Image 1 (spheres, rainbow, N blue to C red):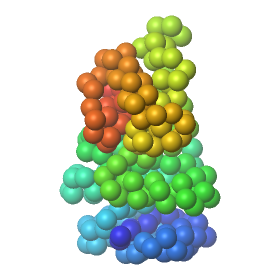
Image 2 (image 1 turned 180 degrees about the vertical axis):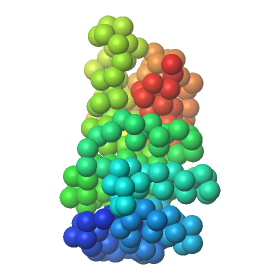
Image 3 (image 1 turned 30 degrees about the vertical axis):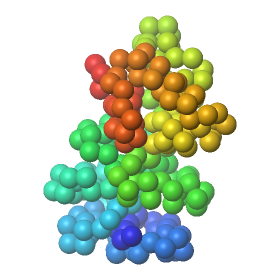
Length: 219
């Protein structure tokens, strides 16, 4: 699996290269600026891009914007974005096209090799991988307590929703919560009903629907 990596800090970039190679990935390019990232994505056509949000020369959201431009040129290009802090705007921009194959992780997650590599693989396969802290903030959005559709969910349904929004399948949620897949299916059906979303058995489509709803797309 070929990866284009964009990270301006040398030590982190070198560490990510070594980590990904240790797990069998091929590093097609490891770059440090936005223009380099744009060229690499256009010329090398990797299986997945792992991109720091902030890259030179602007050090704002150049990495994200380069990745989004590459996705417009090549719809469905798998992109995993790394960020120092939770920024809901970044999550919203990633979700905008609804094609899937997206991920948004805090940089702290790279220190958990298994979790990070699982996210890269999930995104490369067309799935969704969202950081739990991003999900927590999205869940907290909305109006006063009691007025939000999310408040209709039971504590267990909220647990299932958080795992669903991270990109986990029913089997993965069942394993995490130590319940049966049948129980998870019932919870997900209840969640979709309470949030007014169309029920879907396609893991990626349902994750995108939930995330779009949580990020205000239902308004």
